[in-house]
Length: 484
Image 1 (cartoon, rainbow, N blue to C red):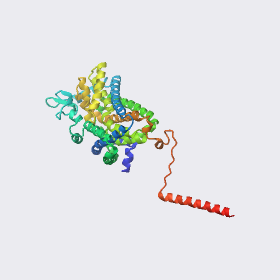
Image 2: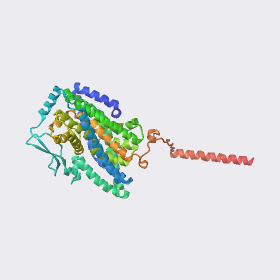
Image 3: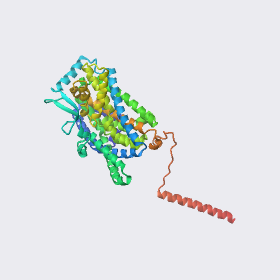
């Protein structure tokens, strides 16, 4: 257990697990398959605990933010910044794909291999995409290739976005409906007095800490997950596919690194700390986000890092982190934009100014409607952007599923950094709302550390006795001097 704890927090240890897992996928596939199975169980446990944690953290975050000065302005700023970061990521991804010309100038072998993959898995019917579906008849699962007499797929089921039964969306795990119901209940909860909600607050506090403990213990299996994912990737992915998709992968990795660097620089400037200190503080949530494949698994680590280590407002952190894990999908917007440009170049579809703007808008839309989805389910929403360009949506389900395990970690990490940047911009610069980080950072805020003296009861009794004896000796000495 101690070894797993050390590995789960060690960058070098996780890199070693990644390398050994890759070799295991080539030479010992059964062991890698077992590790991948254990990793899937880990994700199930994390997602089981993360959804109720999202609910409870939102309750506490709303209550604390409403108690801060200008709560309406604060919440409005959070919403605008969340939208701005998603739009910025989509725009940057589109421009990066156009400038890098990913998908163009592929070799004849790469074109033939990708074309064979698409033709082998493409359906015979078209997919009709609707933005909204009424009731429970719509699938609400994104886009996909039809296999029968035609498929009609909806992006959003209205009953999932505004549920008529909160327990239904909670049981089915629809994050959009869960967050809607949670915000409404949280606002009503926050409007009540402390005396009226004291008992319920104590219950929520206990649930909150229990769920944090579950996720913290489950995260000990991250090295096993990394090992299993690397083994699965090397055993299942063909080298020809990786070579053919290399221009997309390189462009996505570089764009994600640029945006991540900008986000870290912004957080460091707002926190008043150096970039290495910010990286050290965010190390745990970033490692969890990169390796777990889950957008909700880093929630406890992010709350701790942003409030305790970097000193931002706890109320703002507890509100924005759960909200951002669902809605601030900057990494997904970047991914969808680059994927659409790649497919357009692959099919030799020129993109003018109008098409570029359409890709940006569609990538933003796809990022929001895919809220709560991860893995293969999230890849399907690339078809939203491709459908608006009248490109084959089945290309997304075939070409990008094969490399999604490589892209999912950077996607989650970039979205996490966008959430942290929103927190930094909203709560930094407010001394009354920030915790002093001097004690945690060794006086990094420019303040001298405060010395604190604590005593046990026995020590206090002994100290009082010593003072009394000293006083008596002084009195006796005075009496003696006076008698002489």
